[in-house]
Length: 121
Image 1 (cartoon, helix red, strand yellow):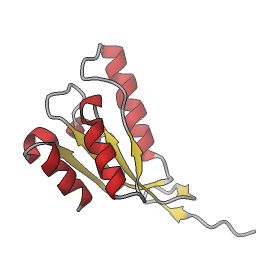
Image 2 (cartoon, one colour; image 1 turned 180 degrees about the horizontal axis):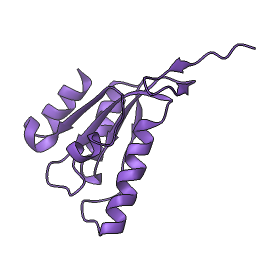
Image 3 (tube, one colour; image 1 turned 120 degrees about the horizontal axis):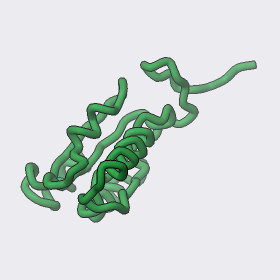
Image 4 (tube, helix red, strand yellow; image 1 turned 90 degrees about the vertical axis):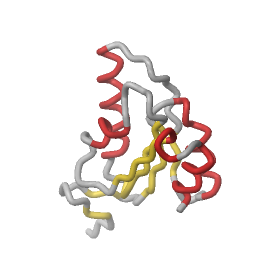
């Protein structure tokens, strides 16, 4: 029996090769959704939670978001952050294993419109 899959660098196999565009905080969901409209082949995940976390909530969000990115059906990801949130894209990136990951921060990119443009290209 043959199993057609994408072999991941960590040894796991994915049957999909999704490019994920995800927000690290709800404040940038509009940016993520605009990128998704311009790149309809991407899978968009808008994080419904804000930037204030208690210790337990922070860890749950970190495990959830990094787990989505680390799923073997995700081939690569773009994570968008605002820049002032507790769960930063840099922190999230440290928990992503052996996977192409790009991050953009709206406050560092010159605003929402410029971040959308960078995310599309």
